[in-house]
Length: 247
Image 1 (tube, one colour):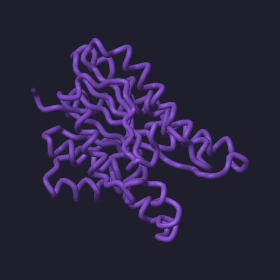
Image 2 (cartoon, helix red, strand yellow):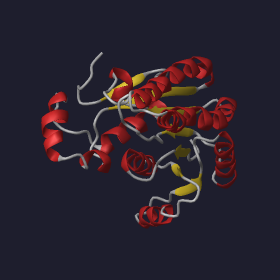
Image 3 (cartoon, helix red, strand yellow):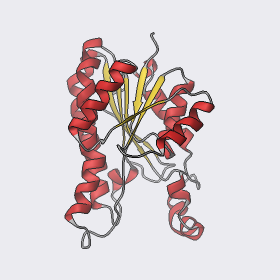
Image 4 (cartoon, one colour):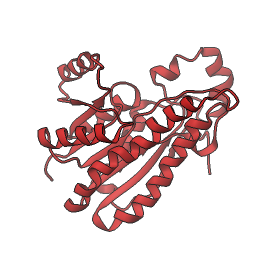
């Protein structure tokens, strides 16, 4: 097969970076996005490419449909049509519902859920026409079980899988798969910044394997879903949470 083009939103750091690295190691041409106006991407890109990954980065406000359109148009022109889309970009604005403002709700819904439509809409017709494509939506265990102080985040992540199931039905016959993964607590910088006593007393006791997940473990699952071998798997939500939530 011709070298695939894989686009990972929110690829600079954390899970996104691990996913970019894994896909590049498997031979994909990997592209990620950065927020318009963010100049720090240059340092990240330089560091990664000095390690031989050959990443490309394009500006994109994933909450804005027109920005997503311009991004995908540029990627297609400069790199090639997108074969694998990983909708990974996301934010949190955690607080109780009582304290949550409309802005707090909108920011999370726009970034975590609207972005999935905005990005997928740009690539789906091409995937269908070429009769091959992979869309992988990165949700969360908290979209499955809920979490105190995360009505906005849990709603957005649950909505991602509703999107997955409906779209998977529409494009299954055309060689395009659409799947969700729902990670639990992963050892990213954001999670490891949690005080150790909180990790030890509140978080790790919820996880039967008694540890945080590794970003590389999530990346490995994404790589499988993006592979030829996963062609019979679509519309699924795969939990990868160390047994924290089973259903």
